[in-house]
Image (cartoon, rainbow, N blue to C red; front, side):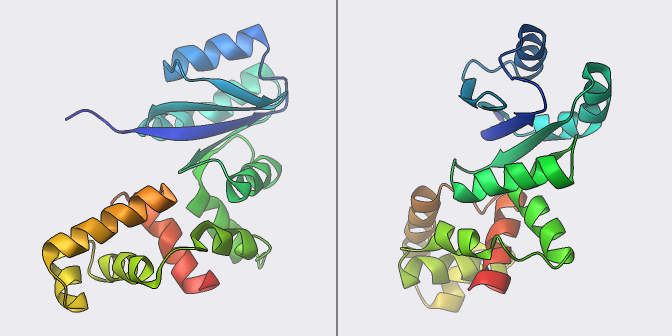
Amino acid sequence: MKEKWSLFFLRSGKEVSDPLFRRLFKDLTSSSSWSYIDKYVASFSAPYSLILTLQGLLPSISEDLGYNISVLLAHRESLLTEHCLRSAYENFPNAALTIADVLLKEFSFGDYSSLPLLKREFSGLSQDLLLTAKAYLESDLSAVRASEALYIHRNTFNYRLERFINETSLDIREFHNALLFSLYLRFAN
């Protein structure tokens, strides 16, 4: 089975267009979809498993290059993503994190300033889609149990879950995305 590719954002203490930096990360990510957001921020697509590699390598890379680097795995570019990348860089440098990781760390320090951005990620969704996604999480990611709990046909449930994923770009069948939606349910809803 081919591994799913994910969206990563990178923030650096040095310009990301630096040739050494670019070569290092392009070789590491083997991504052709590398784009520059500003002088210090870039985004790229790569296999999800890259986050595990980066978690082990970023401290060494940062030490060798002499500046901080943070990488954030996100479901899409948004104000929440920008906030979490900035927070990761300022508060948790030289780490590869997910949005849920950053929010959990902020919340554990009593910083809830990102809640309006988290709420915004899911604003505009129909109540049916929110209930479908919530039931899926509360049914231990079982579509059968979730459809039974909602008293809807399994195909209807699958259709709604796909709509939720398409409208939010958040595939809650993956742990880090399910955790992010769970944080929304617990803190922002």
